[in-house]
Structure formats: structure tokens, C-alpha cells
Length: 69
Image (cartoon, rainbow, N blue to C red; front, side):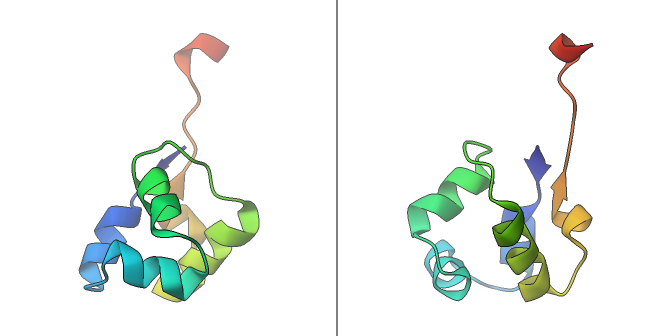
């Protein structure tokens, strides 16, 4: 899954620490999500989308791996 979390965070002038505080996770979790190392739970993905007042699909997009075909 790809995401635009870093873009939305920058658009709202939030540091990783500030975003982490707002969504109730650690800064390390925000870093991992931004670097595609961690997939957020559905609940967390919706919490992030609500914070930025956008649909969850605007931040997170599913991409199938070529290996799965």
C-alpha cells in the first residue's frame, strides 16, 4: 500500500511528533507508515483521513504486486 502521509503532514505544517500526538501513536509509527514499512490498521487509517478532512483513499492507495498476478 502506498501513501501520501508525508505530503498531507507537510501541507498542514505538522511535524512527525505532532501528527503522532494527534493520532495517538509514536513518532516511530509515523515514520514507518511514511516509509511504507508499516501498514496502519483500518481504524488508524480512517483516523488519519478524518484529521486531514479527506477520504482515506486520498492518503492510502492499494497497489497489487506484480508477483501476485
